[in-house]
Amino acid sequence: MSGDEEVFRIFKQTGALLEGHFVLRSGLHSPCFFQCARVCERLDHVTRLAELLRTRLPVDWDFSTVLAPAMGGLVIGQEVARQSGSRYLFVEKVNGELALRRNFQIHPEERILVVEDVITRGGRVNETLDIVAEHGGVAVGVALLVDRSEGQAAFPVPYVSLLELSFPTYPPDQVPEELAAIPVQKPGS
Image 1 (cartoon, rainbow, N blue to C red):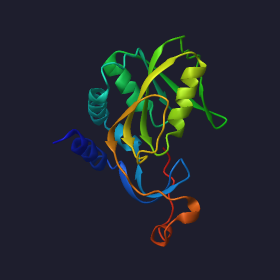
Image 2: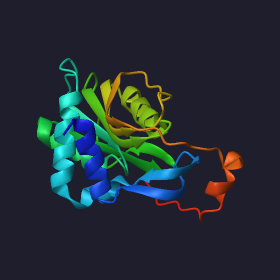
Image 3: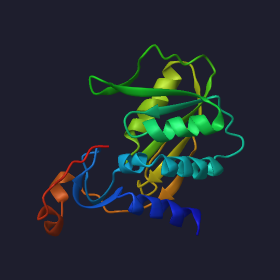
Image 4: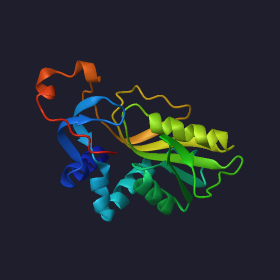
């Protein structure tokens, strides 16, 4: 079984890949949603996904710290940090924006890997990268479980993902009739 097939199987087996009518964190509507928190119910799956993700990291991405945006990246970020023997930090929302809290500190020139679960546009990852730069750290790259941006995500550093899937997304004023007929869910990221 290929790595992509194994990742997809884990998402399906844990009930993380949902079908219906969803409003994503980006505000876009979609017939599919990744509820990665469902994978986190099974730590053996989190361990395996982190193992697979680490095999995708280029060898020149030398980092000493993993930083994850809350909520989505918390568990996978922690497991990547554990497996790589790295320090682990996370950023969380304060008044609607991500911030470094809990007396966490990023040291000047500290080499940091940002880890996130799923992106559609990559907004939380870019916020996280801004925080790294504001505190004098050096982001070496971004590691994602799922990239559903259809190649549209743009980061100032390179990134890798375990799985790239393209499901249609629609602005709120352009939702097709067949999708609009399904009750909207906003399961949270």
